[in-house]
Amino acid sequence: MKKNIVGIAANQHYQNNQDFFDQQFTYSPQGFIDGVHRAGGVPVLFPISDPELASNYISSIDKLLLAGGQDVTPFLYNEEPHPKLGPTSIERDIFEMALIKEAIKQHKPIFTVCRGTQLLNVTLGGTLYQDLSQYSDWKVKHDMFPTVPDFGLHSITIKTESALAPLFGESAQVNSHHHQAIKDLAESLVPIAWAHDDIVEAVESREKNTKILGVQWHPELTCKKDPKEQSLFDYFVQDFE
Image (cartoon, rainbow, N blue to C red; front, side, top):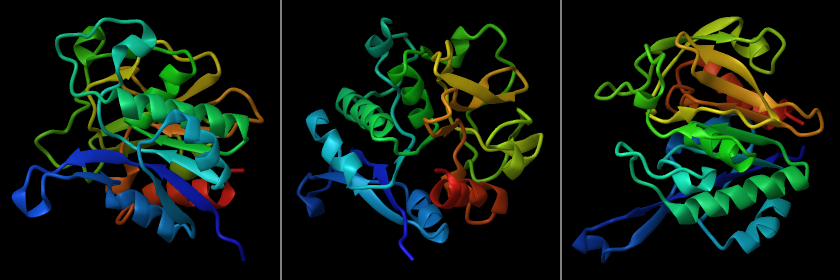
């Protein structure tokens, strides 16, 4: 039986250590690798590359996964940087935006996590709160720091008729590790889960022929011990067509 190949957009880290000759490293959190493996898929990492290569990368896989990481560069949604903006990577932003557009063009399913969901929204025409302090109704702690986000911290309410509902029910507890969030949702996306302060926690595509599922939390950190979080990977790898 053929296994689905999942392209995971990787991040880059600079190792300032003499033993490694001050190299840059391409990496992905292990939870994404393990989650895809347990779901029966074959994970393949995509290094940050020339956006013109996006077509080649996407044509080599069955599905695309975008992970968390840096803040999204604000000029991509026509804003000046807020004083609380964190580290950004314009090279990563532009490459992953090209991957998203190409995956939609080639009708390849997309699963996004945290920053990946925020970048998805920007790519499709939406905007972000650069920091939750810009959101007047902010009432829930969305960054668990200094607590390790390996368990559910806050509640979400889930839309009944959505891809998430059969997996999580009408409500769930999820972890949380972000200070940016969706502000204006792209027209082609639909919100399907919310925190108690109405921050969007999950989205899917409005267009039936485009398969997109995005979450704001980090299932890769909890999927090893939480079957519901692993079910996200199972659904994406096995059933999301």
